[in-house]
Length: 300
Ligand SMILES: [Zn+2]
Ligand SMILES: [Zn+2]
Image (cartoon, rainbow, N blue to C red; front, top):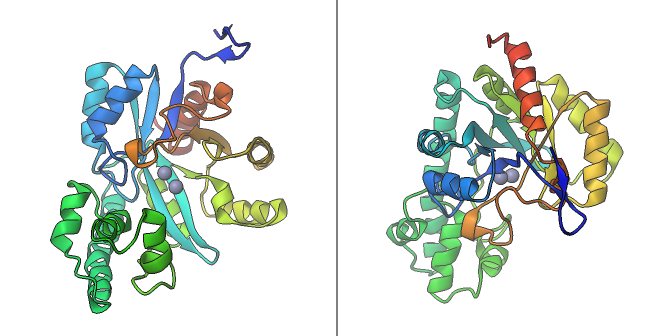
């Protein structure tokens, strides 16, 4: 039961976070550490949703079991659509599923191939950065452009990460290499194949320009298997949140929410904490579970 807090705000019981990254992708903390922090922060459930990988899930689930925190196995897949990149969360995925595994392996290989190509381009520009150093900087997780950006910083070629992307690593810059991504319908299918719940993450990043355009895109995605919308999110304004909530209700989509926690790599974001957290409670998880039982005809 919610009670009034000292500042007139609802004090929240059963706080959850359905969008969290660990060092298995681009978060700064290992999965077990993220789980420990979530437990310490008073969360009752947390989904680990690393980019294009489920590698952090066994460690997170074991830590959750040990500490008494419900861990929802998840993933966040980057898909390519005509407007750019779209992030699709898969919640409650069976991460032992063969097709999911196979497709994530394709993405992993694409990632592995891309980094040396970027470094070769930078080397050709006279910048002597090595893959070995970039791997060292990554500290053992997924290696990607942020680590290359840090290598550029420490060699004095740029002042900060933003400049690294603006000058070298961003789209159409001299160190840019495109990356293979699945189209949305295939990303949705691989999540469904693994009995997961496909959710469109942070819809504002799709840059649809108008609510009408976004609505049409979401309708199209729903036709391809989309089941939910990430309504509550760290960077959503009140207006965006209200718009997505209305859209989810109109189109009969599940409602989810999460912080997109990345640890020290996005220090302004804390676990389970979003501006409108009065809605981010366990009842969302209950609805997700009920949908999943019905949709995949699971027992229990
Ligand atoms: Zn995302
Ligand atoms: Zn994310």
